[in-house]
Length: 439
Image 1 (tube, rainbow, N blue to C red):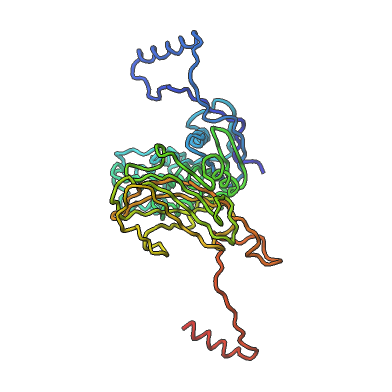
Image 2 (cartoon, rainbow, N blue to C red):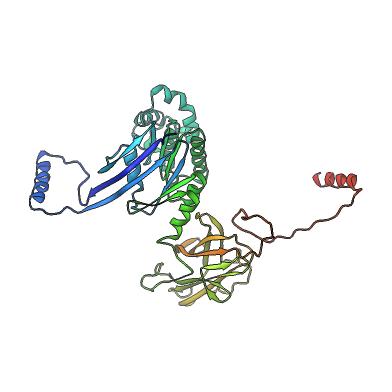
């Protein structure tokens, strides 16, 4: 079976400082072109940046491929080339099938037109025939959840309503290839799950999805394969969990300890993070045995005398970036009596410790995001995403000889179990007791 999408040696070069706005007069155009000509004559080099460099990959029919990478890696540029919005500088793209794309909120919308009118307009922009739009109209409106406002001008829509309607039109186009760029950046949790469900439905019907997102759990949930872009190049390609883990561990996420200079520390005029570390058996480490407790230690600076209700909070994440647990120093989350939470904090350095019990986490890579917040009302004062990383090492403590190789799940907790012998002739009594329990 031939690939539905083939990208060969694709490169895109942009000139720095080049204006994007159209020139309004003939004189302006002449002046700009003369400047370009003179720069070529004087051999003055024009500053350039390579948004994509020699990118090559194939996508098979029915695949869902995640395109991930840091900001500026070239993800959106790649999708714009695939959508024929911009042309490549070098290389070629072979596409076999119709493309539906959602690259920006409200692409093709006219503010003065109603939602109904914009469905037909946006559908036409995305390549739909009028009879296709009519056939899908009710499904589009139902998916977007804007039925009450379908005849209201979209200039009165919220950004979330814009996104829901735009995604509904693009997804119901029924393309062979669906390109989606950060659709989950706008919208509540319910809509995000609807989007993921619709993209899974597109994939299950044999069509192809290319999904650009910084939401690693969503990428891992939807995609079977991922491509990691770094400075315009393909840095890694393979199974989605493997690539996501490499993205989270390489380059910009922490190890077992991190320290900040006070002048560059994350924070504000009230608080600053100074250091954080992972400790096992009294030593700083980024590798923890599965049967050992883990201590997370955070040093922070309080700059405002008599501050109260300060909470140090951590998010513990798995290799895909999904949050396993959230905990903090508030009395509601603390198994110990915290003497400082409601007490006025003097100006100075404080150290908070959280202990994760042994035989709790599953094996594999974990990340920690740090927060300092104040309560009453809740205010996030400091955030340090993925400040620490560590591996939980399976040393066989929770394995039986001949057992399976992997335990599914984010945690691997020892829980109380017991088995009772009911006897050989207790079948009737067993059924009676089961009936009592069920009623």
